[in-house]
Image 1: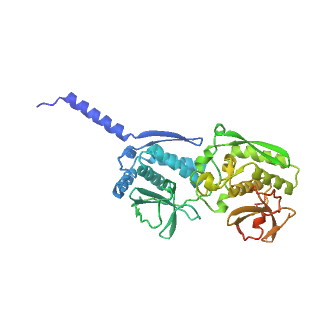
Image 2 (image 1 turned 120 degrees about the vertical axis):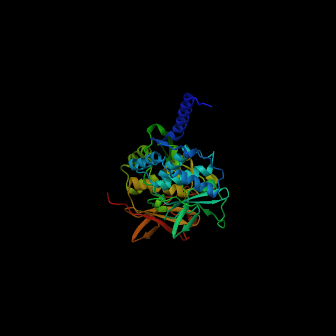
Length: 400
């Protein structure tokens, strides 16, 4: 039978168009805390993958992703990293959002996790995947002390779990996981949980919150600009060393709405009275609640989170008070940890009350958490006066 050349040409055109459309990928764009992220991605992310996937399926999927087609996606991530210089934790939040835009977490958790692994690896991080049945665990190499998530040692290196929050309290230490054959990476480096800055949020993302307290019969009111998105950034942030935890800053708008106002309020006061003012602000402007009742588990709030939430515990108060004293007065401080409490002491020009000597200097206790008694500077909680404590962090300001 003689074939019609017109029909053949039409079929060829349709086939070519189909292949071009299939290979052209997809344009993806989203906002990441005020920064637009745009890229085109290969249609490899549409490859079918079981949920949960098997080891062989995951390895084949990752091999597919490593083929050409995702350069624009990786470049978008690296451009953000170059321009914004985010800390590792914030960059990982960008990776999470990028992975979710490629493969929503709710649709296929294993594919979403595989994308996170792929994007972190291609961004230069030392990451690993481990599988057992439906559990796909995602680890990153980190040398820091992290206290409430699983870790494992591989070839003498510590790896901590980045997605433990997706399997809360369900991974006994005796479970054996199979490592997924890893993709090759040209260079890898470890991950740090240190936070040195928050994103440059748009001013329109902030809401104003009135924070009030009584200072010796005088009502004091502050209108502080706060960004609810800070809750999302730190939603899964683990318990870290106090040296990292106490140095997490405020975002710019929050800082500018609070710190200058506090400086103005204590202007003219000596250091003792000014520190007393900051202590009472921290003690009485927020309600007290334990982490267990507030969040269901141990959770250390950053200073900005403490300002955001209406309730907080002793660790949260100490972190906020530490930050305020550091920014307003730049005074040396030590953090005291008891089995059931944490408090702080400040090196004043003239020591007050019962002091603690540390490295040759005397520090006065400043209790920023509400107690049965209205404790002044230098007064200890009665039940703690004879109890042993550990100095878990010491701060010595840099000369400015």
